[in-house]
Amino acid sequence: DAGITQSPRHKVTETGTPVTLRCHQTENHRYMYWYRQDPGHGLRLIHYSYGVKDTDKGEVSDGYSVSRSKTEDFLLTLESATSSQTSVYFCAIRTGLAGPNTGELFFGEGSRLTVL
Amino acid sequence: GDSVTQMEGPVTLSEEAFLTINCTYTATGYPSLFWYVQYPGEGLQLLLKATKADDKGSNKGFEATYRKETTSFHLEKGSVQVSDSAVYFCALGGSGGSNYKLTFGKGTLLTVNP
Image (cartoon, rainbow over all chains, first blue to last red; front, top):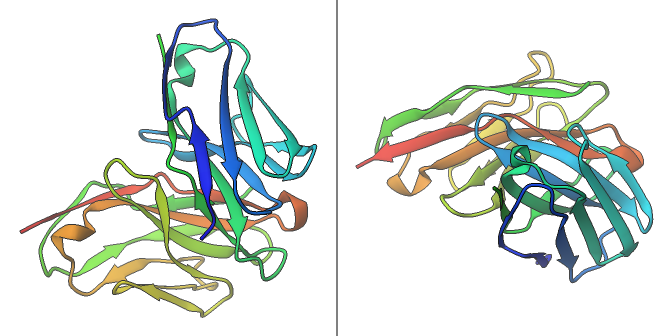
């Protein structure tokens, strides 16, 4: 099984402070993703990575940045947190590749962020 | 762009009832289709998948068939149990190559009563 560890699992912070969420995988998967989950919106893609130093924006990338300096770690940073970024954040890796349009995502357990 | 529309909930059923959760999609090319399940307080787990037209995915008594002609991937189960209570997400995977990503529907909350 693919192993993903997200940290921290819970965080409460204040508006305007920087926050970094970490996603660590124990295998060598190339693709990694950050989603946020909000009631009424399902899961929305923030950023994703298709290799070391290769990242791209998702549909809700404003206010977020990412970095991937090594295969196993994918960091999500909120430079200046706002209350609208209160959410549950999920990291995922792509597994089961069998072609360019295949492959399921395996998700971490989530990081709950509250911005006061 | 790619999009997924799934039946809005919540859905409340009695144990042993038949379940259908509708899912339709819009996509270019030939996406893969997925159903994920999220139990209370947990992350998302893959329930089933289909990678090409007419494929049927199945797992734990749930089934869904990839219908290209109707751009649909409806989730069904013949007899639900209390333990099936969860949020169900339909998703499509596409945009190929390095741009591969999953696009999710908004989720459907299912509650099964004894």
